[in-house]
Structures are given as structure tokens and as C-alpha cells.
Image (cartoon, rainbow, N blue to C red; front, side):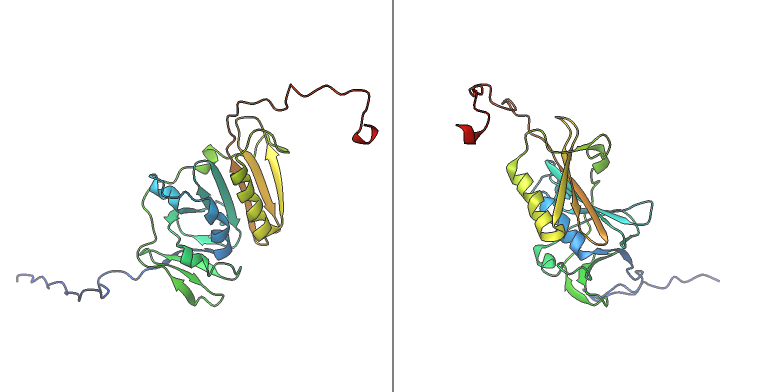
Length: 229
């Protein structure tokens, strides 16, 4: 007896393919963590994946979010987050409007659909199109480190990037501490007061051509303080 192969069911344009498996959730992270790291993404970089956010599961079952433009980076750890696998996700500015509540989450599905959901998992904003980005996001641990640093600031720093770090601390945590290692290593900062999140970042130092302090300034006279002048 000859086996007769049944023809595949045709689909109407725009309707789901009945032969395709249903999408499943692959990422759920605190929406505030997304908003926290977003200012450090690249803008219109030819390395297109730097224009987006890297979301990566850690060995302790927490989730790490990374954003960098090559001159600075920021890393947030969501203690209650979930990530089935590492992904690079595109985030729209419209989505950020719904990301200011710590009870809201960014949910990413296996088919690339992404949305900001409220505390009862109801979508507040659904991003159009596929939000998953192909590409290998750089390993941030090749640049960032927490070894050998001491508290303080040294080296030449782009003041705009420093101001961005201070703005994030003001808007999200309320406290910031700086750590430095040498003239070539990034200036590292740690934010405090983030609840169920942890965050640190770094700013690459400039190769400046000026002395740390001016050598032309007159040497002090007998007056030791301004009051004695």
C-alpha cells in the first residue's frame, strides 16, 4: 500500500502557522534595570549590537544586564530576574515610558516579541516587530574588573560620562562610590540603594597630555592659609 503524504495546511497571510510551536518566555527582568542601563547604549554604532542591551543568565540563577558604547559600560544584576539564555534585546524609548516602576517587567518571548508588563503580567506596552538582535555581544569581563581597585578617583575622565553616572545615581539609587586602579584601567563606580538590584559601571580614561597639577604655580610663601594673606 502506498503512503499518501497529506498536503501542508496553507495559512492566511498574517495568521499564525498551526505547525509552529507556541512562543515561550525566555527573559523576564525588572523593567527598572532596563531603564537604568539604557543611557549607556551606543547610538547609531556600526557595531549594531552595541545599540541594544545584553541580557545574560549567571551561574547563581540571577540575571545580568549590560550596556556599553565602547567608552563606558554599565552592568546591572537583577536578583529576581529570569533568562533562559543569553540574548541581545532592542529597547524602544516608548517602552522606557512604562519602565519606571520596580514592579514592572520586561518580558521577551522566543519569537522575538517583547513587552513591558505590570505586576499581574498584563502588557502595558508591546514593542513592534522582532526585538531579538543577532550578533555576539562583547564579553564585558574582558574590560571590566573588580580586582585590585581602591576607592577614589584618578586619571582624566570625560566630564559628560562622569555626569551621566552621577545622573543615574541621582535618579535610581541616591548614592555612588568610585574606585580606581591605574592610569589605564576604567574608573569604576558602584551604585547603592537599588533594592533587589545591584549595579556597577566603568568609564574609560582619557590619554591626557597635561600634568596632574600645574608646575608653573608659584610656590607658597610664609602665609600658610588664605586667612593669613
